[in-house]
Picture 1: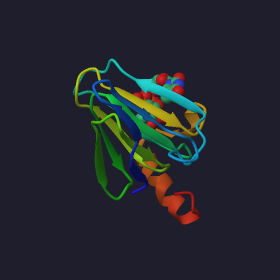
Picture 2 (picture 1 turned 90 degrees about the horizontal axis):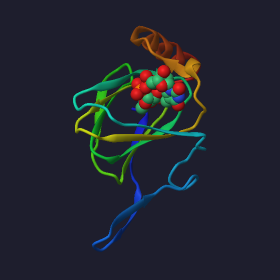
Picture 3 (picture 1 turned 90 degrees about the vertical axis):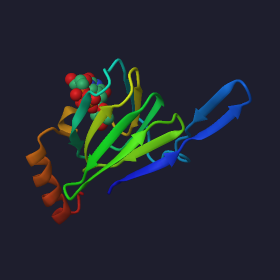
Length: 140
Ligand code: T46
């Protein structure tokens, strides 16, 4: 499936916590044009339910735990973002849902495009048609 779990480089200072960082071109292999974060979500809540046509994104959870459920039209896989030094790169043509596991979790995204609603596919049947056609013409 079109995703990758990465270890975010982290420097620990004894008794003083840790600092994690990402560098464009080294840790993230696409340009970042936008950053957003989602918070204040009650545990058990599901968000998402969409795919992107072109957008690439790195998701990470600096506080709490959020499950990312991904679907490529053939099957489903999930990744639990439960550590601040764990990242998930999600490439286009993946349907995703995000489930808030613990209260007050913060989900951060560093993404390759400005916000553009036309990049979203929010209907699952349309997503299945898009990836079927995309496989034929090389988009997905
Ligand atoms: C994604 C997952 C992980 C904006 O106006 N600007 C923005 O940059 C974003 C991301 C959203 N919006 C608006 C669009 C909707 O009216 O904020 C509202 C909530 O967005 P949405 O329902 O798409 O939120 P999620 O949590 O389902 O999905 C978000 C991202 O939209 C999406 O790209 O991959 O987080």
